[in-house]
Length: 388
Ligand SMILES: Cc1cc2nc3c(=O)[nH]c(=O)nc-3n(C[C@H](O)[C@H](O)[C@H](O)COP(=O)(O)OP(=O)(O)OC[C@H]3O[C@@H](n4cnc5c(N)ncnc54)[C@H](O)[C@@H]3O)c2cc1C
Image (cartoon, rainbow, N blue to C red):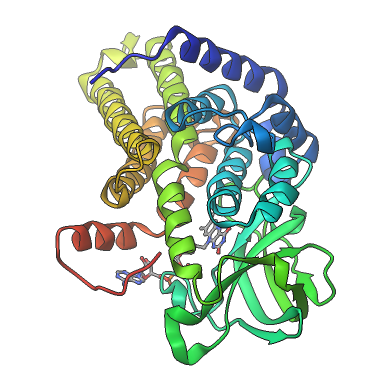
């Protein structure tokens, strides 16, 4: 076991931090307040090579291994405060690009991946519905074959990047009576007649990642845009969720490291009772605990990345990483806020925003309860039918 990064990987990490500080560093407070998604930043990330990190050069990617990809995403979180943008980048990478890369036809890969890697296109993943979240395979959106097309009818919700997306990976059922075996994936282009994107949903955190509902009103999708075989989308979805839940939180490791450094600096400088507050053990221990959670979460995430890199069964490692990193992130943000006293409660210090952004991580890609269920299932316990 080797815990060191190579000189090349370390240099790459530094280059990503420098890129993030240079290009993704404007007024995050205002952008958060106004819930602004900035396409220019998305393009800049594409030009730098973020969206393409783990994909082959033949598809416009960077050809990086999975651990280096995770290191780069962590560096992005360290260098940029735009957690919404970083969430959006990772969501596209693991839940749109990866399923196309692993389960798409040659034609689908050639058509979509280069533009998704370059940042020219934005992709969104549409599984959740108003009546089916955790129980994802209870979806009600239908697809009906009509000649060389399918006709999609239904509604999706919580679709991250829907207001700005060019391409949607939509899951629908060809036959509700078949349950999970009816579910099929489709690549649906924005602008297709009958595809309506709702108004951006106002939300607590990750406000620079816009989210909306989709209504599919007789949307005709050509057969060549079906992802995988008919009724075979459950393995595709489960596969992409394993990538996503294991790796989507890489940038939060970088964010937490930055927040810890800022917290240490604050506690050394802030004085009460004639001494720096960091000299109070009750304060210092909060920061020591953040450090422990940061390092533990980092190792769990690297282990999940290593398992994906080596094509090992990563179900358990991914669920543990997702559960631990998300929950400890929320706890650590609360503690970083607490040591700042009243200042932590103000928007100016931006810890309250970090906390708001962190809360979503215990919900998306499967809630904490679902991660615990998956872990229990890995132990041979719990419900067999759990999916997301
Ligand atoms: C920031 C954010 C971004 C998202 N982006 C997307 C996206 O791009 N595409 C997309 O399709 N979806 C997206 N989602 C939706 C997300 O996948 C769902 O919110 C999540 O799966 C939970 O579904 P739900 O909200 O319907 O809650 P429910 O499933 O209704 O759950 C409500 C509560 O019941 C608990 N619960 C449910 N079932 C069980 C069980 N079997 N055992 C124990 N507890 C259970 C849950 O843990 C939760 O606490 C996003 C969500 C968020 C917050």
